[in-house]
Image 1 (cartoon, rainbow, N blue to C red):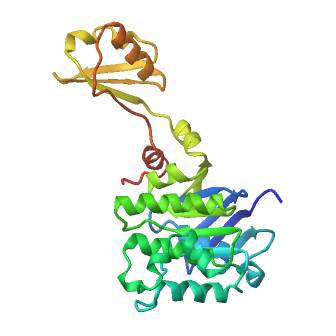
Image 2: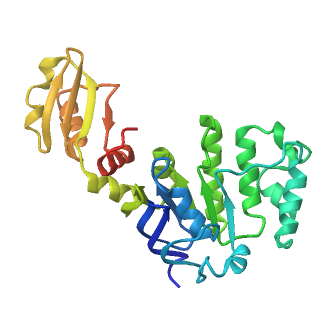
Image 3: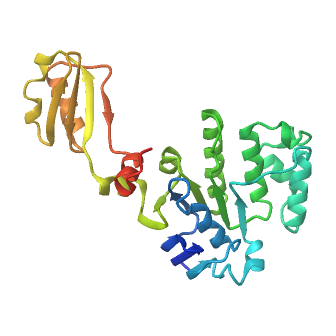
Length: 300
């Protein structure tokens, strides 16, 4: 088996409203795979079907060789999940929650070791209601690993977290992958997807618009590269003749050069030849935000 997850022509409708229309993708072993899209595009429905939590209307789904629609019990021991709606009673203590989940999973891991692995030792006696957002996400990831799963689903993991907590959570996701699990990361955060995911599927209005590495998706979308810096206007003569440069503008203080992917290097080399060394040179290349906008028309 070369794929951990295989989804082919997945469909789902609620009444006369189609939610998923022929969704197909695969996830490889040890991969962080991103399912990227705006809210309401069918991301959560997709992963719930793949986990066996929701019935599909059509298509084929295989997770570790099992159809989740008929082998939910077998998959329960192989799959871990942190869902968008994850919550615990406010009064339950961190240590109690970890012990409970480990026991329900058949005690295949030691709950103390799990707490130690995910930095929860000092929080063991802390009530869930007193945890910060980042601490809660750390707990939810640990609980998703209580059965030592081979596949982990993480849904909108960093929504509502402050920047420091987001970055800490991203490090934890990479640790899940490094522990040997395949990870399906559901997100609408472009920075998160670009940083963590080996491959991404862009889901829009129930259909997969594109699948590939972040670099592949950005390259396919194209678009100019912007190089900007402070410099007197008279020092810019001839930059528009450099290979790959399509336009040069100047607002009286800063210059902006539009060009292809190689243009920033050529511009910087030419400026250095002219003994112009701007300390604020900035390069803006096409991003996943640009890709998403080009593929979906959604304004973010």
